[in-house]
Length: 359
Ligand SMILES: [Zn+2]
Image (cartoon, rainbow, N blue to C red):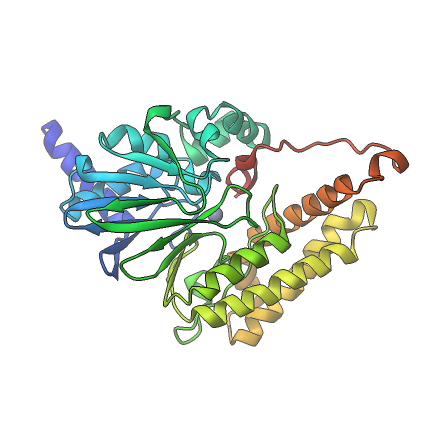
C-alpha cells in the first residue's frame, strides 16, 4: 500500500471519528475525541473558503481537525486563525500541534493566557504533577510551544476578520481569569467556551438543553462569572456554542438557570467554609444533590447512576474549584495572615493546571 493510500485511509477514519456536524451559517462542530463522544467540541467557522477554528481539543485531536478541513474543502493554508476561549488543556492542549499544521494561521488568546501557549513548560509540569508523565501524555499528547510572532493577544474589544466576517472578543472572567467569549458578527451567536457552563446532549429533554456551571480549579470566581453572564445575556444571542457540547438555543432560560446554580454553588461552598478537612466531601455531596435535583426538575428520566456517570467527574472538579475559591477568599482577607497559621499553598496558580489537568 502506498503512503498516500495509507494517509487517505487515516484521514477517512479521522473524519468518521470527528462526527462533523453542520450547525448552520458556516459553523461546524468537530468532536475532539477527549473523554467520550459528545464531550468536547471544536468549532470551525468557514467563510468564503477561509476558516477560523475555535478551541482545539488536545494534541490527539489534530488529525480530526485536519480531516474535517479536508472534508469541507478548506486547505490548511486557508485557516487564518486558531481562536482559544481559554488555555485549559481540553480547549488548548492541541493548539501548538495544530498550529504546526496550519502555515498561515495566527493564534488568538487572552493576554493572561498567551505566555502559557508560547512556553507551555509550567502548564505541562503542572499536568504531569497531577497525573504522572505517562498518563498526561496519554490524555493530552505533547504540548507544543507556539512561536510568539504567531500569537495575537485578544483582550476585551479586540476583533479579527475571516473573509470579512468579524469575530469580536469579550473578556469574560469567572470560569478562569484568562477566558474570552467570541461574538460572531454574522449571526450574533457567541462562542462561550465554559462561561455558559456545561450542557451534555444526553441530558436534553425533548430538545431542551440542561446546563450547569463549571467551577473547576483554580480561578473560579462566582461574582465575576455572574457579571460575565449578565453581559452576554444582554446581547440576547439566539444561540451559544459551548465546548461541552456545541450549539445550544433557549439562551435566556439557560442563562437564568446557570445564574441560579452559580448562586447555589457559592452558598454551598460558604456553608462548608469552617468544616476543615470535611469541606471538600461536604461540598461534593451537596453539589451532587443539587445537580441531580436540577436534572430531575428539568425532566431528565435517566437513573441516578447514569446521570452521575455523565456528570460525576464534573462534580468532583467543581468541588475542588469551590474549595480553591474558599481558600482564595481567605487569603485575600486583610487580617488573614496576622491571625491565622499559614496554610500551605499546595496548588500551582498556573491557570491550565486546573480543568485541563484533571478533566
Ligand atoms: Zn472545558
